[in-house]
Image 1: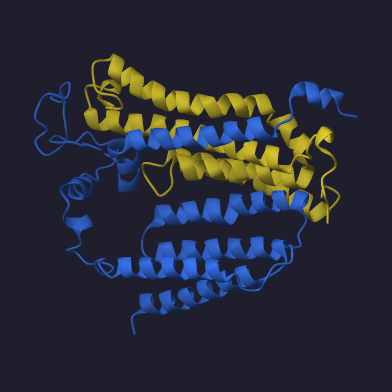
Image 2: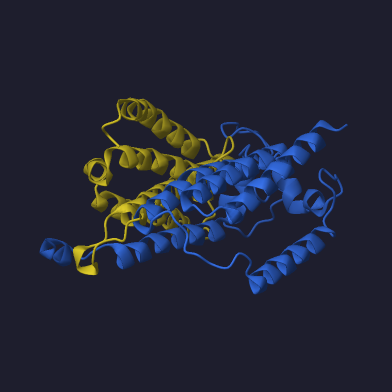
Length: 208
Length: 148
């Protein structure tokens, strides 16, 4: 039996159990812990699929910081969930419909590791996969001094990204506008939080 | 939690290593897995860990609010500044070539590195800010926090 399939099967089982437990459990602290475990398991799933960058993010953000922030919020809110009906039928119907749609969407996706998948035959992806020289290397044929002010032809070497990590190359070179405004979004989130939650200096001085 | 010796010592041992690892992830984002975002979160988690064990005020003595506020904006400024510099040098916005015109490949790598530093600075500062603002007791004017 395929080893990856076996590991994936076990992980799928664990992820499902953790997700269901996170919904069912009444204590919010346990819920935060279960969500952290869920993120850690998902990180292992991503590693199993060779998407290390996603796994890194999942482990650092999902299992690390977001858990700490949830616990920080629970300090103020208390750890017991308010009583509620066991099953919220409209919510369940919405979640089931969304899940069914997502599963339906995956039917069109190519198989895992399919060499003919669109992402592998796309010229952009090919350009990135080909140019995996180390960043110190000044190999001839990659760019060179001939790269002008964007008016010249690029001879199929448009990206000349001498960066081994193709994910980074795509994120901060090919899609650098996108990443810049993502960073701006993070800054905006921080600023909104400061405006909403930070007490004004005058109010803090006036507090007993 | 600072009265627990094991927690305190383990935290003091861990924090420098987490900081170094976070810096490593930011600076090697273009070589290995990770990047500005992940490294920034790891950097922030070191401060958050310190704040959890020693308390928010102790953490803010090391990393005052002013520093995180300025750094959060500085990161975006670095990112946009690199792009604007490229544009001022006669290239397109965020076309990294003018950073090292003799070697566009190296310029690309340098541009990516600088931009990743910007992302890392912003992300780590904002994460620390979120921790600061969420774990602090609400101001007295809003009434005491309901505790279970």
